[in-house]
Image (tube, rainbow, N blue to C red; front, side):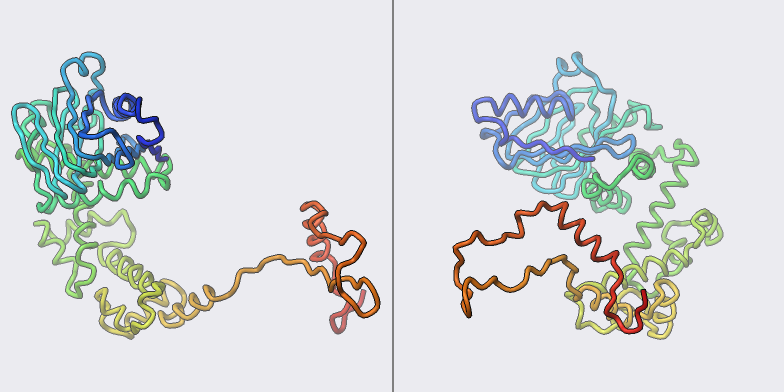
Length: 379
């Protein structure tokens, strides 16, 4: 579940102190110095996904510092992975300084002093305990204050998943959140180990889970390619085809089944998109690598029970039906005199004078009472 903090809820006179306290409690002890008084741009969204704490920070231009005094008062023993979503930041730790643009990734150790200067920006940060990292502190220290380009394949996958985490904070329960957090943490550890050439020191289970996630990311990225096959996936990740099939055995569908299921799901979304109502069904199938219309129809009917064209029509008809609403009929206006319906000297009857529970009971009795006027009815 997410918690949203905004700076504008506090009066201007005490807003700076309030915002420093919020950041210190939810992220880490920091000295925040903004160029202006915190305003509507300053927002903090906090949530947990399994063992990970997710923080989305939006702020105006300013600077953040974590000093040795902050660490002596409270050392959380956590690493902080951040993805620069918007704007530019300048990060400094362990004597190194780097410039982070949109899409770049960085790692910081909250047990050592750091400094970050930024323009108006938005960043998604994930903190996790050091005990969950298989890398030693001195090995992670070689990556602090260094820009990890978002153009790298593994880094791009990690950055994309981190940026999507805030959209699902409310939907994650305990079990699914733990699985998502563990899978993302495996990818983070593998990515960091690859950058320091220590990937062989990771546990075998961590490397295997991360490899599966990389293969899934490759499949999602190339779904529209009709030439996407298990052999091509295995070649892209430098593994044998037999090992690839063994990796996906626990899913039950296999690699080919996963590709087909994800393509059909993308086709179903396009069929339900009102903006694509004029696009032919065959063109939608071809867009997602199902170029043969007959094969597309059979596969879609097997998965969803109807051919794609009928599925689209059925969903459009269902959307066009009006929602049923209970509207009681109160009859014609009561005449006040012969042949007139003008205002009466008597107080008019108002249906709202009856309480709502009375109308609900009346509607229930009408629904439960058998209709005596239908043909062939016998009591």
